[in-house]
Image (tube, rainbow, N blue to C red; front, side, top):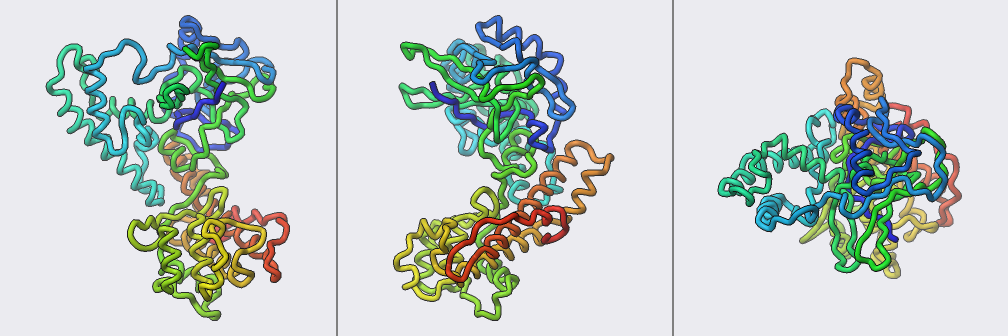
Length: 465
């Protein structure tokens, strides 16, 4: 038995996750769900009588228990012939070769990896997101979709006839291609082949209607037969479920960027959400002064010492092959490379790092690796950096966004966009709070004191909190 690796899937989040989401696609499925359940059962699958399909105004179409379900009970089971993948059904080598040719034209995509990162959530998102990294991804996806539908696919299909035509003679325009790409990229599960070690992404009917939660109440398992010649897929209750409980699976440790692009919703207080920024010495210098360190003498962020440059190059923050994208947020609070870089830049002499491991410099440790003064300067700079990113990156404040969310005239798409950027701002406020809390607990003996109750009131304020 093994758990199935979940590729990015389409679905509706649980109300408990308190998401902002796009619901306009869900209602169209409501009238078809009884037929889907019957189809699964007719073709050898099993659906527990204790679960039902439900259309909820808050979470869209999903699965819910209609009676008490004990822990460990299988609620859905699919035989191996029901999942839909590249190798499902009758094989047409000519058509498959043509599809592979089309897939090879998508940057970073082929028949085995699937249509990664081309989800339907990308459609209709505008510059009102106020977050350049996501706006760039939206434009990139739209460009790929446009070029495929207007240039690449027509070029490949113009000589295809009869059985060689992979789409049975049907024309594929941008709308059809966008629907297909979003279905595969956002609904697919990755199944592992133990014998070959390969994986295949497949669509799992009914199972893909389970909601999302970072604390799911069900799990997906791939169960092999006794002779390992076949398998079945089943959803099993992780705990006892009361009647009326939505079934949930964990889609993975995904940021709101990926959740929005691939599924069309976000999760409030997402522990895996981050803000991307470029490693910029001039911005670090401003953050250093904003952190109140100018009177203590600034390190040379723009022109570090040769020994510092060598270490920054090892972190890939300088020199050939540098990758300057760093992040704030997530479980680590600060990108490890950014944390290590500041510790290095605030070190006075190379001898201070003689016995330090570069990997350890990227981690939060009970005892600051380079001492009290170094860690204090690093924390002040990072807190100021998060505040500067918050102030410079968005045209509206968190309070203004909350007021907009309370305006009835805003459509669901607009509410989703405002909710997305509000979460980015609140996440940055949380980063500032966590860094200041760590600074308060920093003791002169070089140790970090016990964690106290954090001041979460910053999330409710305007500006820097």
